Image (cartoon, rainbow, N blue to C red; front, side):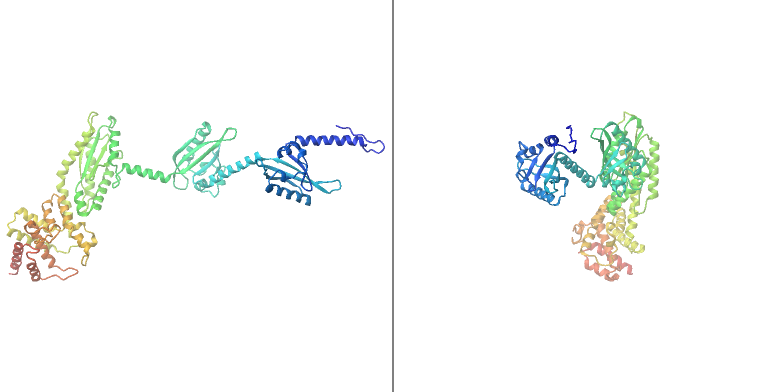
Amino acid sequence: MVKKTKNKQTGALDGKNKKIILDGEESYFDELMDNIPDSIYFKDRDSKFVRINKACAEKFGLKNPEDAIGKTDFDFFITENAQPTYDDDQNIMKTGKKTVSIVKKEIFRDKPDRWVTSTKIPRYDRDGNIIGLFGITRDITETTIMDNKLEKEISFVDALMQGMPDSIYFKDRDSKFVRINKACADKMGLDSPDDAVGKTDYDFFGKDMAKIAYDDEQNIIKTGKHIVDLSYRETYKDKADRWMAITKMPWYDRGGNIIGIIGMARDITDKQKAEEEIKYLSFHDVLTGLYNRAFFDEELKRLNTERQLPIAIVMGDVNGLKLINDAYGHARGDVLLKRISDILRENFRGEDIISRWGGDEFISILPKTSVENAKRIVKRIGEMCRQKSTAEIPLSISFGIAVKKNKPECIEDIIKKSEDRMYKNKIAENKPIYEKILQSLKENLKKGDYISETRTKKMEDYALCIGKKLNLSDVKLGELSLLLNLHNIGKLALADEIVSKPGRLTNNEWKIIKKLPEVGYRIAESSPGLKSIAESILSHHEWYNGQGYPRGTKGEEIPVLSRISFLINSYEAMTRDRPYRKKKTKEEAMGEIKKCCGTQFDPGITKFFLEILKEEEK
C-alpha cells in the first residue's frame, strides 16, 4: 500500500505523492482489465471503442486490446446484430439510463454465435457530461444451452404428462404421489393433478389393491428392479374395476440414489374383455354355453389320473331334435338344446365337466364318481326333463354311462362304451318320444284351422271308403288315415303371418307354399311314425296330368294315397268358406270335380268318390 504524505501546512497531497497514488490505482485497474474473464470495454459518444480488456480482445479475435481502438461493433458483428447494439448505446448516452444484465445473442461474422449478459453504464467527465459508456458482458452460452435444453426437456415432459392417454405418476420413497399427469387425475376423479400430491393409493383404490401396489413399489425402491407390463385389476372405492398394464421403475437423483418410483398405467380393460371373450369362445359352445369338445379333450387329459378314479363318462343324445328342426325350424331346435343344457347344468355337480360333444350329443366327465352316483344324476335329469316338457317342445335325452375303475383301463374305451350304451337306450326310448312329438305336431296343425272334428272325421271316412273300394290293405288304410291328418305337416315351418293370412297370397308367398310338400317330406322322414307316408306327403299336390308340384309327376307315378287324399281335401276346401270366397254347394263341388277329372284328379278315384257322394243323397 502506498503511504500518503500531506503538506504539514495545508494538509494537501503534493504532486509527487499524488502521482504515486494515481500510478498505483492505474496498476490495479490494468491488472483487473487483463485478468477478469468478462469482456470489459469503454466507448466514446460515437460508440467507438476507446479501450477494451484482454478477454474482450480475445473474443474479437484481436492480438492486442489496442487494436480495437477506434473500431465499432460493426467491425466484429454482422449488421443485424451490431445495429441494435449501436442504437442501444446511443439511447443510453442520450438518456443517461443504464441497462443491467440484458441477455442477448452476439452474432459474429466468422465464428459461432454466443449468448451473453450485457450491462452498460453512461460515462461522465469531471463536469458531469456524458462522454461515452462503460460496458461489461459475461458469456453465458453454456449455461443458456443447458437452460434451453432443460427447458425443452421440461416442455417435453409437460407435453408427455399432459398429452399421454396413459396414467403417468411419480412417487417418493414412501409411495406418496409427487406428481401425476392429467389422465391419471381423471382416472382418480380429481379436478387437478396437484390434488394428488402427498396422497397414496389408499386414498383412491381398494385396500387390497393399494397394499399390493405399495409392496411392489417398496420392493422396487429396495432392489432397483423394474416391473414391466404387469396386468392386474384396479379396484376402486366408488366405481367399476378396470384392468391395467402397469410399468414401474426406480426414480434416481443426479447422484444415482433412488428417491422414489416412476409409474405408467395403460387401461387394457377392453382388450382384457376381448381376450377373455376369445378364451371363453375357444372353450365353450356358443349356443349352449357349455364347454366344447376341445375343452373336453384337454380336461380329459388332466383328469385321467389314478387320483380321480373312479371316473364316470356320461354321454347323452337329445331325442327328436331333427324332427323339431324340420317341423318348426332350427330356432325351435336351438331352444330345445338350450333347455336340455340348462337341465344338465343344474343337475351335474360343480366339479363335473359338461360339454357339447356334437350337434345333439353331450358328454360329461365325472371324477371320483361311481356307477350308482352317475345313475342317480341321470335319473334326476330325466325327471326334470319330464317336468319341464311342453306340448311344443318335449324334452328327452337318452344316456349311456361307463366308468373307469382301474388305472390300466383306456379312457377312450370307456367313452366308446358310454356311446354304445347311449345308442342302445336311444332305440328303446325313441318310440315314446316320437309319439309325443307326433301328437304335438297334430295339435299344432289344428291351430288356426277351423275344420271341426266332425268334418275331419267325415273326410277321413270318405278316404277310407275309397281305399276299401280300391282293395287297399289294412296297413295302407291306416297310412291313409294318418295322411289325411298330416298331409299338410309342412305348414308348421310357415311364418305365422302366412298361415293366418285372411286374403289371397302373393306370388312370393305362393312360392313358399309350393315348397311345403318338401318340408313335410323331410319332417316325415325324420320320424319313425311318419316315414311310411313321407312319399305320399311329398306327392300330395301332384296333378294327374303332371302339372302339379313339386316334381310334376303324373298318373300312376303318384302314390295312390296321395291321389285319394288330394281329391278328398280339394272337396273339403271347395265346400268350406274362405275369407276371399264363398263356399260351394255339394252339387257345385261335384261339378268342379267332374270338370277336373283327368287333369287334377285320378279318373278311377273320382268315379268312386262321386258314387259315394251320390249314395249319401239317397
